[in-house]
Each structure stands twice: as structure tokens, then as C-alpha cells.
Image (cartoon, rainbow, N blue to C red; front, side, top):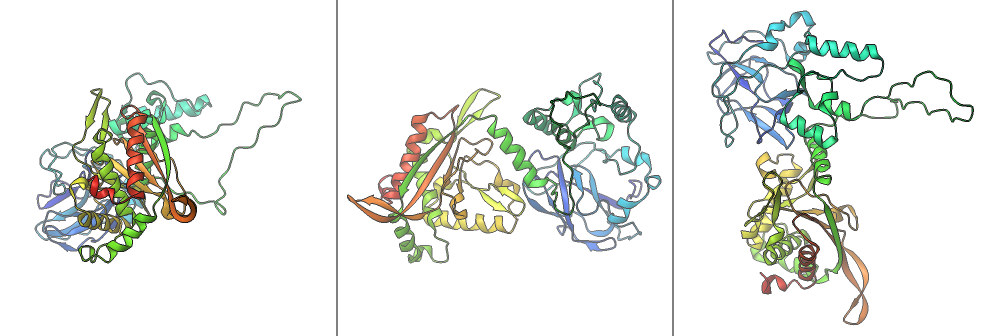
Length: 467
């Protein structure tokens, strides 16, 4: 690794590409050692707990070293690439070679190398950070004595129970929150991070401990033999590491499900007139080039319902024990992507005209499918829509996105027999489900919102009379 004594070399550190994120995975390098780069050139793509983001380099020069190979998860503030601003191109090992180097080739002193305080490069819009950071230890580096002793004691006692630490366990705030969400006592977790810090992986390991064989004691004659521990069959099973967006979503959903008391209500509604309006709007010149579908009118119906019942657009502030009423609607749209479920939102959706809303929805969906949704687009949501109907599902009981008070699930629209004007006729019917936080939304308010959405979809002219 390039040392800080070379004044011509600039170390580019992993920035906080979201707000409060602590790590990111390097998905792809776009440069190699020896390449010439310019200020603003994208050098790599990383995936955080929120999205995939391309990182531009803030220097002109030649790539001296890539400190981590693709697929490595790196802490925010850790140097990931070295640039020689004087144009030198000293040879350096490739990331894959560095990862496979023997332990003796990586000086222990490098793991505790101090970085000078000062401005750290970050993405536009996220400010600057001043901190002193330490590199994550490489494979093969000596384990701290405290950690090694804990591991030895665990091995000797034969029960897999770590020793009780003498002081408060070391862990970052996000790790402590994860432990709380999973019900893990940090004092029982063996740390694997530098200087005895507990990592996310340590918490997950403690939440799902491996099975240990029972003591060899005679079993009663009538006892049923215990089933053997499950084993992994590589030929018939596939294991997929849970990380990035999928890992963050899982933790967020667990936290939401066990924090906010959910209530879900359902209503089945005739949306035949709404579908007819969709076809009419497709022919309207104001919607030329825009994607017009039922989701557009469902979104507008929800926005009108929120306008009529504004108290549902709120959040619960646990710290201050307050209900925070939002005077704007950032409408979230749940989107399934190859990296997992994400919920980007349309900022100030309530202030948009129907054509503007159609344009914003189209851009949101296209960006999500390309995997280019920015962290900012997934922050600050107030109310969400999840369209499970696209999978042919009739309805569901959606879980609230963290920090939001309500989420509307839209089921599949199907031709069904329906009583219309006193006669049974085939009509286009769907089922809506509204989940809400019962701490701040009672049954009356939730019912009013759901009933208003249903009424608009059954009689879309209410978009004019109620808007």
C-alpha cells in the first residue's frame, strides 16, 4: 500500500454516500493501476445499504494502487484508491493479488496507520467530514489479545458461551441498533473487528448460533432420538450472502414490524370507470410520451385522500414522544429490483399535476429497474404504495417502511361478477389494503382514508370534486 510519506500521492477514501451509512461494498472498478484519471471521472461503483452509487475521483493523476478487490465491504473513511497527482505510476499489486498475499507480507503496523485530520472527499450534496480513521485489518493480521483470549476460552469450555466482558462492549451505533432489533445481548457477543469492536456479522452470528452436540448422557428407554443437525448440501443448495440493500431492508422490516403496532384494513372496489379513464388519458395530448396506467390514478386517489385527511401523513417521534405532522407528501413506490426491495419516493407529490405525477412515476420506475436509484431518492418518504397486483396477488398485509405511518397495497385487477345498478354484471374489481401505525392513527382515520381512495377509484370524477 502507498504510504503517506509520498507527498505526490492522494488517498481517496470511501465517502458516506448516504446519510449515516458506515460501509459500502465495491461492486466494480472502472480503472486499473497505471490508468490516467481526471477530476470528476467515475472510478468505481459501490453498493450501500440504500443503493448502488458511482464514485467520481476528485483528483487528476495516475492510479498508483487499488486497495481492495471487487466484492469487498469497506468502512466509510477507509482509503480505497491511491492517485499520484504528479503522474508517477509505480507498480502495485492488483486487488486480487493483495487479498491472497501471505500474512507476513502485510505489516501489522499498517492496520493502525493514522490518517491526518482534514477534509475527506465526499459526494456532492453530502458535505465534508473531518475525522481520524484506521484501516480495517487485512486477512492474516494478528488478532487482538483480548479477542484471541475470548476465542480460546470459548473453545476450552466446550459450550460456545463467550466470557463476560469486564466493560461495555465496543460497537458502532448502527450495530447496537441491529442487536436491539434482533434481541441480541452485546455482552454475549465475541467481537471480530479491530480493537475488539463488534461488527454486524458478529451480531448476526450471535442471533443464529451454530448447534453444539448435546452431552453424552444415557437417554431414557422411551425417549425419541434427536434429529441430526442439518448439514449444507452444496450440490442441492445455494447460499446467498445477505448484504447491501437486501440486508438493510431485512433489518428495517424487522425493526418496523416489532416497533410500530400495525393495523390493516381491506376494501374491495369496482374500478371499471378508473380503467376507462386510463384509456382516455392515453389519448390525451397532455400525456403524450408519458406512461399512463392504473397506478397513476391510484397514486392520485391516495394523495387526494391524504389532503382530505391530513393527520394520516405523519410519523412517530419516539425520542421526543411526539407526533410529527407532515405538510408535504413524499410518495413512496415500492419497487422490486435484483438487489432487493427498495422504496424510492416522489418528493412533494401532492403539489404535482397529474401529467407531472405521471412523469415522476415513469422516471422513478425506470431508474429503479436500472439499479441507479440514489440514496436521496429513498430518504424522507411519508406514505407508500406497494402494487402487489402486478404479481397476480389479490392483496396482502404490508409492513410500514420505517418512519412512515401508512402504506397502501393494491391487489390484482380482475374481471369479476359484481352488482352494478341492481344487476350482476362483469366488472373490473380489485382489493385494497391499508396498513397504518396504530400509535398515531386510530381506526376511524384509517378507515376514512381507505374509504376515500376506494370512492375515487369507483367514481374517478371525485378527483375533480374533491381535489
